[in-house]
Length: 606
Image (cartoon, rainbow, N blue to C red; front, side, top):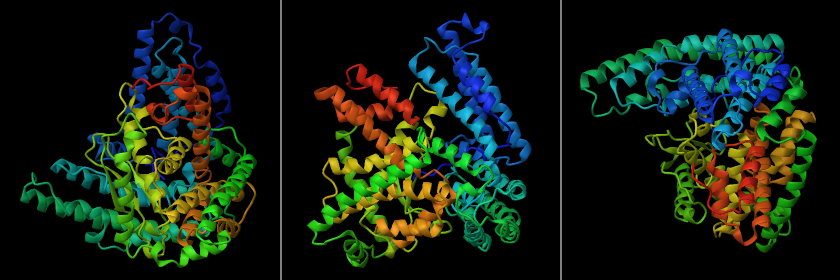
């Protein structure tokens, strides 16, 4: 999983069906005044729109701008007020109208693609308005209560101004948390609330930060090491300012928010875990399926695909189990859990295992890719305040300038209870050739707008990472049969997601039914099962993108191999898939089809 820093939690509700239909119909059908313009003029117009849109994103998502190395808004935090949310929708409508005025016929391929992708993204965002996601802004995976402390480790601290901007930012905590509490109260009033037990997890997360001493807080992290260029007098003054801001603005805000969650939000939490229980819940889940998979599949179709994939994986897993002397998967799974050699002796040992697999994969990459990223990668631990309810590992993209490396964050909570069998697959997924390689290549693209370099589509990004787990097998890794079994267990994990996610959100499954299905069809450790089950409940549809995206990439590869025959080169196929950055799966299919139609070969670099 690659964690995203959300732009802004959007927005007010209004009917956008008519708007979407009109704009989709008018896209590429210009007004009379635009028809006579030249290719160069229309391209310049679109490039101006692309840049204006990007600048708007940076201004109104200052935390994201900071992580990308744009320091212009380092003293700002996002505005979560209803007024700002509404204004965001209005700006989007302006961009949609500007895009719809430009005839894209005859424009360079990448320019037209950029226009299509931006228009699609903006219309989807408008269509999401009716579901008022901004009224449920926190859960155990997402929300300002965890994103702000995580942000600290991503910020550059090179100058005195960097620290002063940081202090200003810390002093804004009371305002933004108040805005979020207002949004939550509106959600409570309209019945848009997460399950009660999810909110109890949020309460514990907030309290874990609120109860810390200022010097032990993650917000004090930048004081641990100053750049040599900052004078001693400045260091003393900065340290005093930072500590004062933490003590007077940050920690009291967390204490206040903890009480709000405990006494207002938790009691209002809903009973049923599925999204169907929300207002317009079935339509919301259908929207989330489309958003996550970028495919036209219903919940029922995906549920059946999941069941079929579970059976396929189980058959392959049984072959390995029998080779190792076990008659069935249940017996083998129990043996896995009881085998001390398949569990890390310590958190450091778990980190070392991830690093070992990533370091082993690195020299093999030229066999699979014509283009490789320049950005470095490191393996670190998940922050302790967030680890209990986090995934086993997740990636964190580096800054485009390479100053902050990409990171694979490894969860050390209950480290000795975690299985080592799946570490190899997860290392390839989160690191290379998975998330880090794909995201770094996107950030290093040239000749495309900035928003293209930072685009994210769950099915593409997570589908690629899951596909990457298989690549290790193709080039000779997973030599340990237990690790190979772990690869299949990682794959069935994603197949199980298709079943339990659709089960809880469309078929009214209980949480226990989800857990029971996990136990029936996997030997995944209990720590992961509990955290993952709650993740799907809190984040409807997100987990569907992994398997659906992987299967689509495999489908496109098989189709290309059949069409090109001996001309097919895996390295070229991978460069086509990765060459345009993150894309919706239907757009990716069109890109691959065009490459095949030209007879394959190395694709032109962007």
